Amino acid sequence: MRTTTASKEYARALFMLARREEKLDQVGAELAAFIELVRTNELVGSFLLAPQISTDTKIDVLRKALTGKLGPEVVKFLLLTCTKRRLDQLAAIGADYEDLLNKHYNRLEVTATSAKALTDSEKQSLAAKIAAHLKQEVVIKANVDSSLVAGLVCRIGDVVYDGSLRRRIQLLSNQMLKAKI
Image (cartoon, rainbow, N blue to C red; front, side):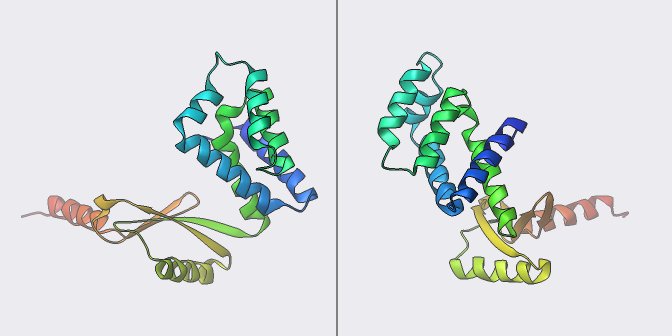
């Protein structure tokens, strides 16, 4: 998923509406839930992205399916994205909205990748250590990559801190190859 100028503008418009209505978190949660549904349910995703299905049909189905289940702000927003044929950018719009929400609350999103799933206490401990260092609230998004063997890789913005065993072995291997015998 790559964010675009359009996805940033749609996210900003939704954010401004949510802020005016004092529903920042609710709108974010509902949008994220819908995006997850589209991502995980192949039938829904195929329906929404099918070019052979008319926009009017998609709008009717979305209106009937979502009214009463999601807030009116999110329903109207999804209908607008459908009308403007931007449903293919929903994931990017959701990511951009999340970025705006994090900036609003002065939160920093950190992606932590480990060889095994982190426990809640490990996530809290990691978040507390990073927050103390950076003087910001930290939200940990944990991923699992068994190829790391052990250790942790943290991505904070564009910076990657690689403390994995895989990386240490790679560094050791490079040193051994450069050694003069």
